[in-house]
Length: 187
Image (cartoon, rainbow, N blue to C red; front, side):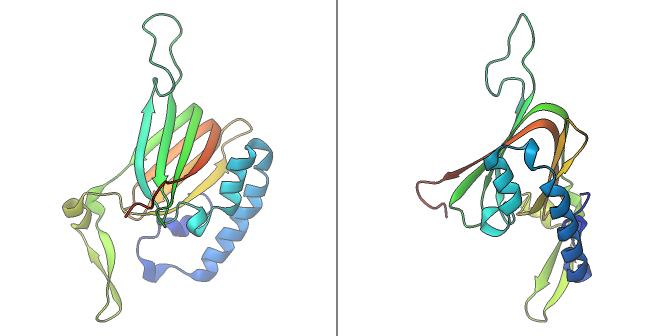
């Protein structure tokens, strides 16, 4: 994360709300400059995408990467270009958020189950570290948040950070967003 570094802080006792407010203000300033590079729907997500309108506390449903996401790979001729698609179930479990990326410059997915998790003990209101939590549960957990930044005049960088410490980072020339209301709420 370039601006929203507090999203990567896994020990909540160490998060300073004044620092978070400053990070957010600087982030929004640079985000405003990216409006001409995004479609209206995609821009609206990044500008208004906080709380239920964003992917904070969302769950990753699927992450697809490949040369055949839109059409089957060709055996002969010019190869298909790599594409990436990430689907999330938002925090109130009413919407499916889909991010699609093309003209990929760089992509990484990082998950280390050995990092453990900070949890709260409600009996004494204190945080503690459970070193084996993700090894036992083996899940990514909720999304802490995401950040969109420019790489250069051609590419944008979208980074998603999970409570588990996992990261998805995509640098691409084209990023699109689609939101779909689910037929019935998923429990």
